[in-house]
Length: 83
Image 1 (cartoon, helix red, strand yellow):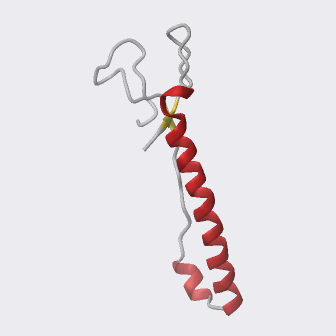
Image 2 (cartoon, helix red, strand yellow):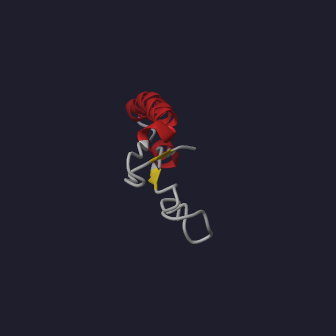
């Protein structure tokens, strides 16, 4: 799990240092999985097995924002992107 930040406060806040590496790792993994799925689906299509294609699913990745609290960590002031 990772998040990206667009928060601009407090002054000088740099959200990219908070979770940038995990986001980059997730994106790189998605690229590798995407290539593998493309190959798999091309093989199924070439073999003409349309029923097998109906059972195949893709990959969905959600990158959420708003992990930080605006004022203080409470039940109502945090995890904005996850909501």
